[in-house]
Length: 276
Ligand SMILES: [Zn+2]
Image (cartoon, rainbow, N blue to C red; front, side, top):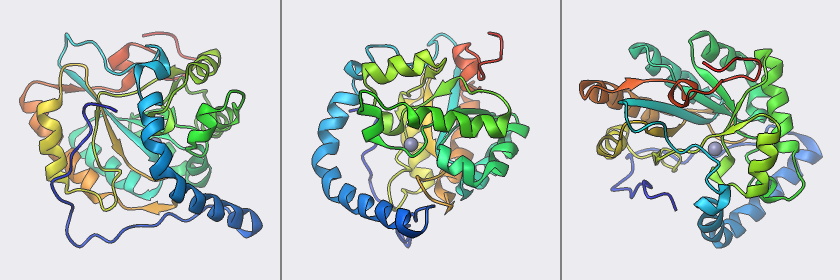
């Protein structure tokens, strides 16, 4: 398990749990609902085992980036699981207030739903990476499946007009064979060294998340937030935006500079791009 995992002190009062709804309708939608219910039953049993195996060094054999150089006070803020109405827009607003560039790892199904939000992020100077088509752990561990990678890359390519060169595995799970097929497709694998707990429902208060993250940031740190949710069309993330608004000025006061993942790691964001 990631050592930077958050132990929640409390959760924000008055927040109702938000249920995602499938983007698919009709018979296919019903199948998706059944799958989601089965997953809810099995997840508590299988997730701890999967986390132990696939979040560890053994999952990627040291082939994934977990942070940048520890020699310069630079930090990359990253945002997973968008684009969605509400959450991604709130995060983009917060970043714009400070002129901070972020890196957004997008779920392909959500990109198909809201390409206009991806375009807004690109226009604002943010980097875009792939985060699989449907955020499936099963696809990641499958020895043969590459559709989850290729469909997400295609969705982004349709919007960006370019082929992304960054990939973050859903749930952070990796296997050596998943890493191999990502690298064969020209994708750098991006993990993190600080994961904020904003994926929890209800989301912890933003000020607590910022206070928790602040002492853990080191030069080269990659921070994970979540601006969206799998198969959600609308997903407000006010506490994530609040955490960003507190973390950015606090780290700047310590001399930190905010950069995108390609800048932090000195790698291209897109496959038609020369190395910096
Ligand atoms: Zn994710």
